[in-house]
Image 1 (tube, helix red, strand yellow):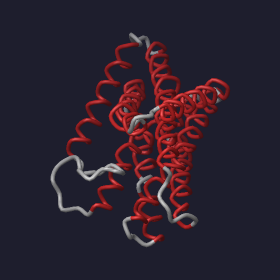
Image 2 (tube, helix red, strand yellow; image 1 turned 45 degrees about the vertical axis):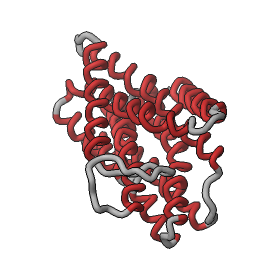
Image 3 (cartoon, helix red, strand yellow; image 1 turned 135 degrees about the horizontal axis):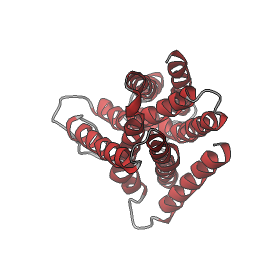
Length: 264
């Protein structure tokens, strides 16, 4: 259990570091991110999360369930559904504001615009943290299984890569809102704190009740797919010409697939 927590903390710590590193771009640039580049980043993140949901979460969930003598698709489908419902509930209840939008979502609140912007990114960092934490916990439980560990590294690397532009995408707009650079960096970095927090929490849950691991893996997959369909892909295709967003999705999917298959 201790090793699972240590590995999960290390994996999610890396993805958090990448968010902070991206947020640090606020010290180098003051301008707004180019709209086309923003679409590429959003599409890339979507592609990474789609591939990770399949190869790093759903397939291991099915395999783990079948090894335990269960019907593989039941925890995969059930956990996936619960993950969608969880993010749907969070999306409806938690106040947040997407970059480029003037209309907050969730319950009415008196929170500042800057806080709402950070909350939007924080929302979809939750399933990412769960996914990475569970992958490393799974690797730790399968002592000596190098393939599981490499698959966890591949997932952390893929999520980390897309977290870098994500950190910049929150800190730079905050700077445009008139927030000092150091504060924009801090707020952008804090949006990634939920990854190690939820990564460790979900490992504690999985360690306490071993048979729920397939359900938790597919839960994280469902939550990530909700973020992809609800937020990332629509925002990557704003405007008349959406080819660049589509290519971003394809590139993210391809790179994450290669990382998972080659390293796993």
